[in-house]
Amino acid sequence: MKINLANIKKAQKLLNKNECVAIPTETVYGLAGNAYSDIACKKIFKLKKRPKNNPLIVHYYNYRKLQTDCNFSNNFFKLYKKFCPGPLTFILNLKQKSKISKIATNSRNTLAVRFPEHRVTRKLLKGLKYPLAAPSANISSRVSAVSSSDVREDFGKKIKFVLEGGTSSVGLESTIIDLRKKPKILRLGGLDISIIQKTLKEKIKVNNNPSKISAPGQSKIHYSPGIPIRLNVNKVKKEEAFILLRKKKNSKQNYFFLSKNGSLKEAAKNLYSTLRRIRKSNYKSIGVCKIPNIGLGKTINDRLKRASKF
Ligand code: TXA
Ligand code: MG
Image 1 (cartoon, rainbow, N blue to C red):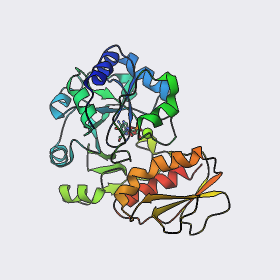
Image 2 (image 1 turned 90 degrees about the horizontal axis):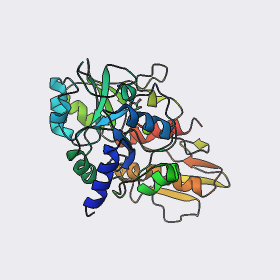
Image 3 (image 1 turned 45 degrees about the horizontal axis):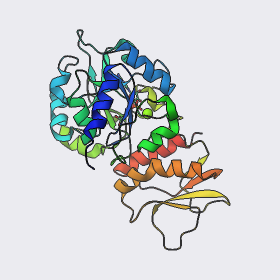
């Protein structure tokens, strides 16, 4: 995709005026605003209908720009070197002198930080004097947006500008790791946790217990396509959409394939757009085949499980 500099300039201008702009990232689109501005952060919460106690994730161009706001550890640098920019979010301690808006953090002393890889958004971040608070660009509890048209579907004219960046290449939100003490995964995501473990040379706990919500977005009901989902099915009911991992020869009209040949990476990329497509086709419910619980399959299963708690 060719980078459109005029669009990036337009986004910068709006952001400088404390407006919200949707931005492309390799995971999902984000609803962005100046993370140092209370006004901009308030607008994000309002647009997204997000509960005030659910803090915003903040996007930086590189760690140098993060130095004013957060403290780092050795583990941070190990992971940063290997995976950033990319689909990994760090929970770090905020510095006392940090300029991050208290609205964004809901007055916590921690910050969720990410360095997105998407070329358009990197170019945008490089030219700004502040980092961007940007939760996923969808209405709270609904499926995330992986294209500019998904964003428009959710927000219509309420959003001033959507910066075009094509379809998100990963298609699932970032993996969140808490690095304040012993590393802990707070959200499965677009980066396979087994390679994080290899890099840190230790087994990392995954905190998927919804009764102890440390990342509020990890609430049980999330990523909902708005209709019931049944998991691990071999056969679907009449008038039910059927999501399959790999393409089948004798396909039927209600069959939706996540990949050509069973690739979990391709399936991850197609998951949210498939859920949106099915919703628009007026099916009453969805049946999903068994997805192998390895690598990105773990994240896909996590999202489907939450989406099924409709
Ligand atoms: O891939 C992504 O992470 C995308 C793109 C746009 O970067 N963003 C995204 O944002 O998924 P959001 O807001 O939908 O999910 C961020 C999660 C939320 O569950 C939020 O509760 C959690 O991060 N979070 C934010 N600040 C936190 C903090 N200080 N401690 C723990 N969790 C935090
Ligand atoms: Mg979200």
